[in-house]
Picture 1 (spheres, helix red, strand yellow):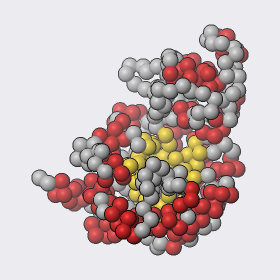
Picture 2: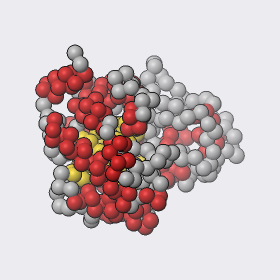
Picture 3: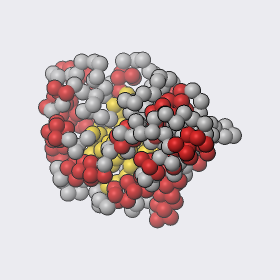
Picture 4: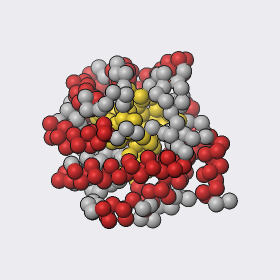
Length: 380
């Protein structure tokens, strides 16, 4: 049976994919690009009912990855087969490749898009046109060239949906650092585009911040530029910049003495040890974080962020980083400490019984939210 016939069968079985705004906003697992790591056991342990990942368009358009055999595509498809709701972000990365400027260039660039959507659309509940356009595009192109391109990306996705009976909400984004004046200026035209297209459900915000003020400023700025009835999702959010500002803090003295760590160490040196040399028992990892005021005072970040998100009627849902994914390179005092964010401490902490350990407090607050929303019910 040809792939197209299989996809049509999936569509008939599941019906047109559509999603009204839930009675309770969702909180799901974010895989980013690492969709090959989709694992039912870990999803069940976290009680996740939603998951998100992004697919890099050019990997498949250029043929470096095969849609029919690629483990990331198969991982995304597996999420739906396992019964989860899904968010699909499409990434167009122009950091190291020419940006399509002319209409002919855009047409050539996007000719492959329907083929990609054939493989992914039947498995998506929400679609985002873009991943991080303002990071993945040269700064000089961030306004009209970027807007012209992403308008056509969004229009072609929408036209594909209409032609094939799909009704998933289509979002535009994601937007970054909207508390910064320069990023506000660069983002204004794309926000205006989102507002102008009647079939765009809203915008995706990636809120990696240091302060609560930055968090709310970003949401307020975006919502002020949308029309009534539009919504926002946050497929990435974290206190990464707060953690980064803490990397030169001393390792707590009592902790260092108890676990026989050098008392001269700073936070980044301890993180380098556990991520690059020897993961530690979860007891030590929890002791390190709980003895560090910069973390202990923010240990309920996920709970608090979801409360803050929930104060906005326009909030539809969010996803949070699932795994640590730090490569084998020295962890220095100027690294972005994503390893402090994730729900699973799969790199810094020793596994038990073949299972990755929960991060300190974050996973518990994440599970608490799943229990809370499942008791109230969501409406797919």
